[in-house]
Image 1: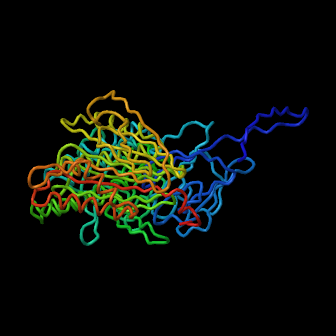
Image 2 (image 1 turned 120 degrees about the vertical axis):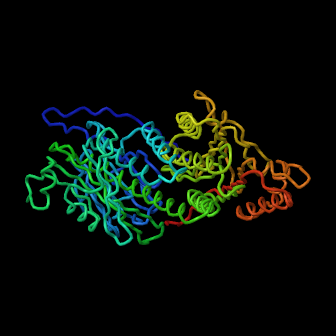
Length: 565
């Protein structure tokens, strides 16, 4: 083994020769399906793509295996497309090779689901949605939850539309906002108009020109009119009569990414978001336009979900509604089986009602580590399911920032408390394992997972209090080294507290015996064995709680040879 030691060498400038200023450090603020994170550009050629060997690995249907790269050259940085299928876009324009400057926005593929904000360390800050702090992100999640409380009434869509318009007006500092949605025949219908201060504007029609929104809806491309006075009056006469000088309109598109090589991207246009202002220049900022387009992407999904929910509410009875809710909740969970180069994980969650409060989640981390979590929200049914969805979103946002397990759970605790939801709390276990077998974990009042090794069984108890109970709760984490073949089993209390027909609990001893009896089998076989054992034990008794279990086997580097997918 060779040990390397760094040394600092002082270099004196040569008299009479000019000295070039050092090139500033750079970073990318990445926004994709996993959330937001900051990645330093620490190589002369920084590669980006879906393949695991890239310096920045990003999954997504329209991200190629080797998509793009950022190179350091004399005088600055250069963005290059590496022959991607769906292209690389710089500030809205498709490029093959182009210099980068501070604040440039790079989009991968045609769907806009992956965005990279290029920033130089010594340049002034850029105001954009990507640079929002974690606290601001959690505040937005809280605002969305407030809007979704309307799910208990028939006014789901109006509440969501108002929430979208108010958010857009705040981001853009615009004076008016409109939303038009497509009907069954693809024709745009006026739905809502709002002004500053969350004021609903009177009338049920569109008093400005319909040409711009109809063009945007037809093409699927956002449009910015910097000054209506500089163009032909014609179709904009009504708008000019109102004193409007500037217009920004962006399509509302529901985009679904298929995570397969060169798979198509499903895109459905459902309407347009239209903003205008009497002030010239109010909407002209590229950062503002970028933020509005990103907001429109999220808004489209919220609006589409609200429309689908209302349709289900009108056509289905309560039983059918719960079935739909269960499908939505299951869709929020990751695929049950997840294989990496050094591990295999499987999990399953069975609610005691149509929807429940248990969850599990996986997180692929930038440093090649793998994070996994198991949680249990207090209560059952729709209230627990809603809080579970929020917690999953907050957890993913924090975990993908590279925070430690203890820091991540501490952030989730603060997010729950900030919402001031009475009698709502959550137990959770979160761990991160690295390719060399180092496991770091934190347990927030959850049933202690068990690690099965060649030398015995270890319970992972170290952590802190239940999430959502105490604002200043402290969380610790523990670390251990895994050996190839070691098994970690996480579970909710629905497993160990399952009752038999005679009123006896299943218990941790039975779970331990079940895993030990399955030694040498695959993680999937172990998981199936757990659920079969619990089901047989509780035969004849009603399921009283959600049942969730996760099995992870550490394989070392056995799988790490030659898999470039």
